[in-house]
Length: 514
Image (tube, one colour):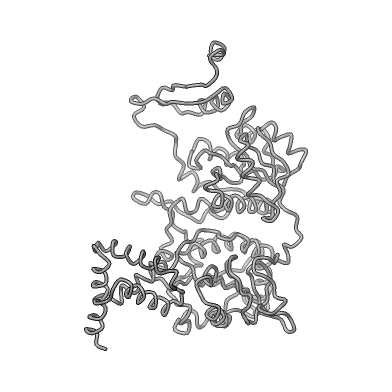
């Protein structure tokens, strides 16, 4: 069929026919399953593409598409493949690397007379997974085996995502969830129009390369065809494929894995029922099946995500003392820090003084600490109690991390990290961040590692009010907030607007209070 006839047929398509055409095209190119139940999503994202091009209707976009098929096919792949990711996603895999995986890979590399660990992030989206691995390896590999280096290849089918990854620029909020031990020295603050962004420094960027690769046409990639990797991360990809596609893709990917290498999927993904030469060695972590061993898909294979990493199995949970004067926050922390997640809340305290007493009684591995509390604030606790033998302390406060007068002071006084308080609406997001940072602080403390607050201070903002002569500050409180009010007022810088306080239930006490 000529291009003119093809275009004419395209223009005459109905909305439904065009959506079907796009779905089939994307499935053919990427393997992503866009079936009947995804039709509404496909139409919605195609319509969004039309709006982004300032085209008034889907029919107008069909006309535009017919004359720009090559470019628009690439654009639609970007719109219809998921790019949601974040730094240090599924932290259990990083724990596996630290406890087991890296040591095994180092020994295997030595047996090959090599001093390099090679990792492939096979669906890297916009690069967060690659840079997470780079920060992690840059921190741990020199401590495990001086003289070793590493190389990470990130690939994705979407060229726009790879362009973002190569650029290595992310919003400041994107790296807030990264444990401070891994952030330090690896990111530079932007200036001018990009002052709210950070860029990966050479310390990690030099180890990372990116390439547009379709996993179903690997043989066409020069870079992939000559490589063997110690780890292949293919996380949260198989959820879009059929079992037959999963089997074919796994068999193909194994051609690029070292004999002792590890193949890592997303926690929500399973290879059960697939006849592939792999055996489970951890939560969604696989190695090649040993002779006489049970393969994935056999009747005795283990469920993905239900198998403890061998070297981590049987380890006691990290014991946590949670300190906060809010009962609701303590309840949320107990929901986050459960034994199934590797933690145990051994006690709670509602002030700094209470925390000091409970710490001596319970001897926790780590602590969470609020800033504003009665009797003794979090800052006062740190000033009084932080000694070299004190367990790691992570601040969990309603005060913004960018508040220079408090957050930075906590970190300077010895707090290991900082997280803004969770709520029911942010429980999953904050929960992951809290668990990741507590586990990291607990393990890193044993290495005697100190903190560098350069990047934190570069983003810190003083709580100044513009045009204070034209404004007033209003505070609503009750008698129970007196200690918090005292701390708050003492921390305000000069040049602030006048303050009016409304206090509930203190009419009879007003003379003595004043």
